[in-house]
Length: 628
Image (cartoon, rainbow, N blue to C red):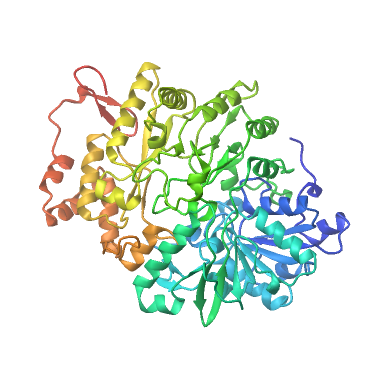
């Protein structure tokens, strides 16, 4: 792809605006991320959607909030409004580890440089803009604002906070995926309406002078939640249920004596609507202002394709459904193939598509067999505690898409980098044709779309903990591993299965982690893809972490909250590291798990000839039959 002129991008400076012949922008977007004109970056998507609607849109990426505020002044006032987003990640997850320690890099910044955005950019940017331009509406969007739309527990401050509307001084929040909402806001303001008079746009949150209606949901006030954690737990249940409905109800919460109104979400985007978004003229590259600098997040997705949005998995620690929704919006095959063709023409394309995926890689084109049943459903997960009988789990369209992409003469191979729900791929449907297709999908995935390592997420080995996670039994992982190993053997492949696990999740005790260590040792895994549970706003697990109560049952749930407890659990992932051995032994003795001690640290009786070396000190036991 030839070097692009700045005129092909949304303008980021006064000079770029003047080169386009603009005296004033209609809308100015402020983002905590660098400006990458790619459909995986939210600000670029919203900018292109508004541009397509006929508006003059400029963008200020990563403004300096610590100097004389020249970045906030350089483009002047927009005609309609400012849009503010912290970026593609919640800024606090971006900045800090699960132990609240500062990270040393930022993947969404040129050179991975840390410190180019503040904590809570939504608040910082909005307050500055409101002080400089009090008469210009501010619309906050992106995941940080979206997940903080009601009272929420903030792990980094360790306290319950009100809706982010309160401190940010923004006029309105656009929550969730904002293309339709942001365009409607722009159209209404363009028609001369005042922001304070706009009360009925879906997926918006704002202070309202109206009163709740009879059919609306009225939450406990923020002040009540501060006094009683049970009120906060009850609030979460209502919010999650309404967020997972096809058509939710209006939600209200009183904060500081004022009503905050939360309008329900739009229906899922149609295929035509989502295709139109991905057909917009993205250059797919960072703005020329970053010439010569590497933006790590872009490097990961530059040759990837998003097939769909939404996730019906409903994992209790995940924010995807709270932001993107439970219902899947899938692109057409034609739309995907056009983007693949566009990627193949990029200068740096070497023949490999890095990911054909989505929030969960294998939910493409799936949904309810009878949509009318779905419209009445409020289940947070279509997969847990069992796979919904109304869910279409046939992988045929996805299988066809994989094969079609690989038929492109310029594509050597396409990989699946997004997480795969193996419980979905292995689901028994009772229909022999669907079951056969799904078996073919698993075979196709393993033989042709794994880049040496397939990452899956069992998350834990304990059924008790998995219940709190809304994940299937670990027995299903054993079954999938046998399938994975057999397909590798049949095709003479030497690929690894890499499982993800979480420690310190609500409901997880040290005993459970001890058993996880023992179970994974028996499988001969030296765990790499692991994380300590990090509470993030608007997840079931976070509400349990903060309140100590399960919002749906009212039961008290143990959670490791102290740094000492969390460290003890996390340490058990790394039983194979010599520097962790002594402390692990002490911890296991305290809980009288001498059986796990013996399992982890007793010397094997077999000789090394009964093991196959796999690199990085990984061994896999070989049975007498020669099978793994």
